Image 1 (tube, rainbow, N blue to C red):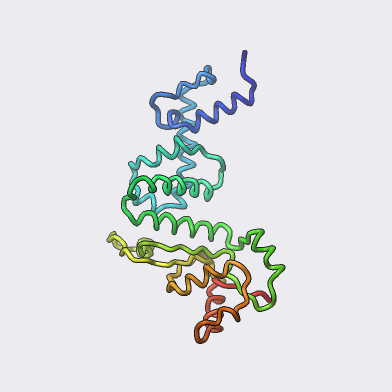
Image 2: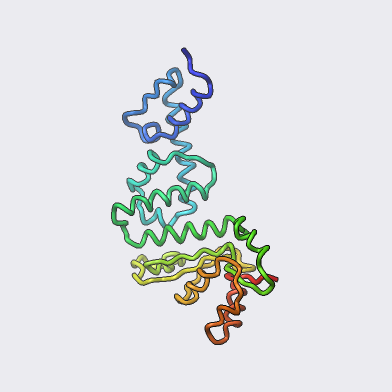
Length: 243
């Protein structure tokens, strides 16, 4: 009995996104698709794979430079994580999650690639939706009083083990970044044409982490010139004030 059209379509998609169809080798017979030109299926599979990897590489260019062109992670990713969306950012995040899961069981090479990938994902998230505001935080605004402060919704806090910022500088040398705790903040300041990366001292990093919801700044006045500090953070697009 012939299979319903929907089941055939599912089988076709599963085949086109499989490692066997993309890379060749065994396991790609797909008996449900008998009668369809195998060469054309292979071309379509390779084309779809290339478009997907193009999207991911666009978000993670430095990560792919460090991985190398022959990295085995790519094939393992394709075989275990079929595409679920056309979104460039979501595909890149899916690949990043896959890498993180691999690095839990094997030492990343080079060791600072973890921080490089995390920073590229953070910049892509801020750039993709600079006005992002989650529903929970938006609801919290109803409870905030005038003058209360919080971390801007589009700010991402990134504690790095290596200072990987020089890797992203034009014309930077290939020397390995220094291994030292580097608290980074990724944000889109007012008027900026792209995400900005700031290194902050641990105290400021902890302050921003604590400002996840609207807070009365009077309870945080723990250093001299605290008001000037908050004003500077507001100017940099890291903190917002409830008007």
